Image 1 (cartoon, rainbow, N blue to C red):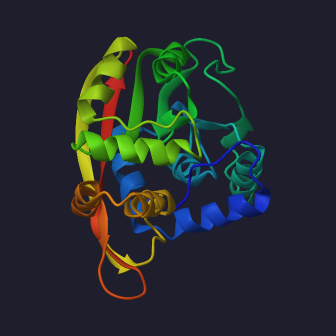
Image 2 (image 1 turned 30 degrees about the vertical axis):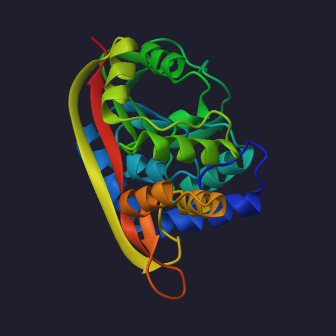
Length: 261
């Protein structure tokens, strides 16, 4: 599932990405874990940073009948599609707007919770972004963060980073401890963390979050003739198995909840 995009993405491409998100088992399981970790009570005011096509926003709207959900994204096409979906579902307590950079357009202490799901790569300075999210939270407000878990092999991690940065120059992979350190450096108090592993055995990359870019990384390693890194990729991400690009593998995600002291 190709979710790395530039702000100039077309509306048609946004529709394609939304369809891939909607059909992904991984997405559904991941969002269920995110919502469970958030433990919303129904009346909070929450922010979704890097809201994309609004898949999480729809769940937030359902979970907040007496509250409010606001989503931010840097892509005008994504914002347009997300807002259209919310209007169609009559989610009057939810809205999405365009926002660029680490400076977010709200007063301090305006939200009870902030979500950032697979979105830190949008920011050239992730620590500054987390500090800005903290500014927007009231005292005791919660940050819900979810990112890919970086592979343990440093060579594979470097290859993945190089490949992903061809599309998005700021992309980086974090280990769980690195995310915990970022959150701590932003002056949050970590409350809870978990690792979710999504396994797959399927034809093609459809439904695999950022599957296109993982496949491109493997192709890059094949072209370079690096058998050790290729074996590491096959053991840690996925490997072709048989005809029609049948793939077997797994991806891990770090989820955490932190609070503004």
